[in-house]
Length: 602
Image (cartoon, rainbow, N blue to C red; front, side, top):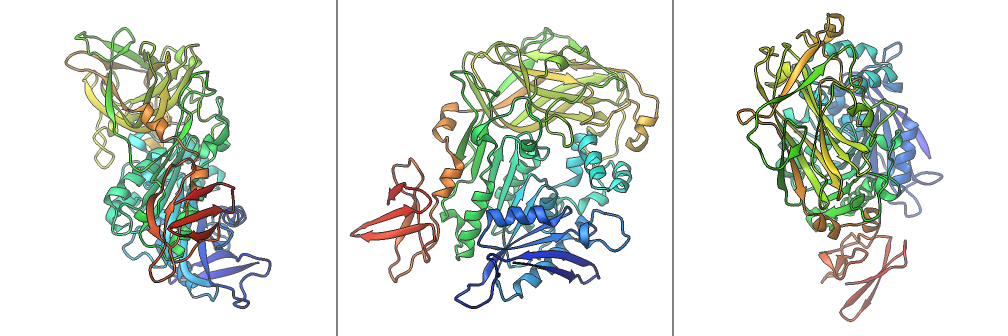
C-alpha cells in the first residue's frame, strides 16, 4: 500500500515523498494494528529502487523515500538538477515532523542511506537540533567531507567526481568544484567534522568496502564518532567493511566469491533498529559486535592460503608497526642500511600511468587487478621485499613516510601497495598520494616547490589484507594515475585551467639516504587472533536475541551465537521478539529460533 506526498518546507520548497506501509491494504488502525516504526531515506535518484530495498530489508517498517531537494520530483518546474546538501537538516526535519504526526507512526524514525543518499543523511547531522524522533542511522558507502572525497591531499578525483556529475546531469556543478580547489567556506557546510563530532548523538551502522571510493572516510567516521561523538553516539557506533563497496557491482579481475561480497550491514541495522523500537536503551547490552570486517587476500586462494574471511570483533585488535625501508636497489627491507642515493621517477602528464582497478567510480575496472603491465613502464618505480616466510596480516592505517624532490615547481607523488604472488601476479591493494602544492594542507595557500629541494611527505590509508607465505610486499611510486586522478601539468597552474597550460615533464626523486630516508609502516595484527574471531556475520546476526522480559522479577536472556559454548552479554527483555519461542524449565531457558533448527541453552 503506497501513497505520494508533497511536503512544503518553511522556505517554500516542495519535497516529493513516496510512503509505503506493509501489507496489501496498509495500516488501518483496526484489527489490533499497532503503530509502525519508519525507515526514511533521501535520494537524488529515482525513489522506486530505494523503496524496493527498504521494503525487502525492513518488511515490518513503514518506508518513506524522499527525492532530495533539487532532484527528481522535488525539483521546481524548469529547474536544472542541483546538489543542495546544505538544506538537508531543514528538509529532514520537515519530513520527520510529518511522519510522526501520522496515525500509523509510533514516533520512531530510522534514517537509511546508501552512497549519495547517505551523504544527505550525514548532512542532517550538521546541527545540534536533530529531531528527537530520529533514533538511529545506517550509512552505507559514504563519507563525511565532500571536499576530502573530491580532493584527498589535493589529488582531484576526476573520474569519480566529474563522471558522477555527468551521469546525473549536474555538469554545471563541475565548474564550481574546480574553482574551489582549496578547503574554504563553500565546503564547510558539507563537512561533518567542521561542526564538531560531539554534535552527533545517534547510534550509527557505518558500512563500506576496502575497495570503495569512500573506504577511508567510512572507517574514519566510525572511529571519530565512536570515540568523540556526543551522548548517544559515543560507544554506540558499528562498522561493517566488505571487500568492494561500490565495486561489488563492478568489474573485478580477481573477484571474491561466497560471503565476502555479502555485507551484513542491513542485518545489523535491522537488529539494532528493532531493539531500539522495542524500547531498548542500552546498546552496550544489546550484544552485537562493533566490528564486522572482511579480511581480504589475493583471490582466488591457493591451497594453504589464509585470509578472505570475515571476523567479528568488539574492538580494534592491537597493532604492531612493521617498518619497511626503501633502498636504491629496489628493495623494501626491514633494516635501514646507511646507504645514500635516490630513485628517479619520470612524470609526463601527456603519457600518464593508466588507472587499472582500485576504487574510482565509473571506471570499467575496479578492485583487484594484475598490475604487471603497469610495472613494466619506465615511469613507475617498484620496491619489493623478499618472499615472506610466513603469512602477514594487516588491519589499520598504513603510513608512508617519504622524502621527495622534483625538478618542477609542482608535481604529484602517488604510491600504491601491492601483493605479489609466487607466480609474479602483482595485485593492487590501494593507492594514495599528494599534490605537492597542497603539502601544507588544503586550508592553507598553495605553495610552489623549490626545484630539487627535498620535502617530507606523510601519507596514511586504512586497509585490511593478508599477505600469504612466499608472497612479496611491493610499493609502486609514480606521478600520475589517470583518469582516477586529474592530470597535473607540473607547472603550478590552477586546477580549472591546468590542462590548458603547457605541461612540463618532471623528474621526481624518491630519497632513501640516512639524512632523508623513506619508509612504509604496515599495521600488522595477529593472524591467529583474527582467525579465532572468524565468523559468518549474517548467521551471527540472525541468531542475536534481543528485547526485554515481562514479569515482576524479570527473566534474563543471553545472546547465543552459533558455535559458542556459553552465554555472553546477558540482558533483560520486556518483550520477546517474534523470532524466538521460550520454554521455561526450572532454572533454564531454552531458546529455539524459528529461522533455523539450532537450539541454544542459556
